[in-house]
Image 1: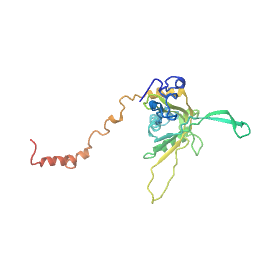
Image 2: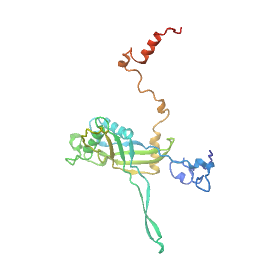
Image 3: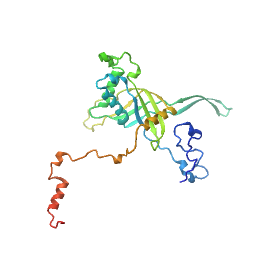
Length: 291
């Protein structure tokens, strides 16, 4: 297929006003004119959205006041970056609001732009709850100790004695999270959001059911989070710095070493059972063995 100097726009025009010059040039090609321009098929290649990658930038300060602070920080980072089966609620689309007035008497209207707003980001993470319900417990303590206990209406940080902070500004209970979408070769940034004042709006449903006529249910959680998000070229550039911090050289999952290195001793002890023993018995009974 044909590729020329104009297929990618590079740093020209709108291509030079962002952080990803590897975008197609809208002035090239076209499938819907008089006839499809198949000579410039590359200019019609579609955008396929890649999964967001989540990076914890800051975790709540109150973790440092809890027993085993390192465990709190590690659990939060792993939960956000590796445990969610779905992350959504990240938005950045622009809406232009308009007012109108009559353009004559036929019913046509003249519209005037009156405002531009950006869609609000409302992060939502979905999890499969794990054995022992650690995800709900983690969020329960985050809410009750860092934000507010439902009974007393005070954060339970006040019960930590000498470790009680002298204020409850948002840095004590909130985090900062970076979410970005890499390009298809994991070298550029398509979109990025930097969200601060990130804290849970709940810990998911907690219910109990008895119904012996139906199958048991897998625990599924969808937890929404508060947050104030920033987007733009500066956030994209920061996201690229963070993304490039991870070295993907040789990170081919297909070449990953086996997660088990040997046969378990109790299985190996059953020496007269299984495929190996059967093959060796067959070989021992061979009436015409190969010398």
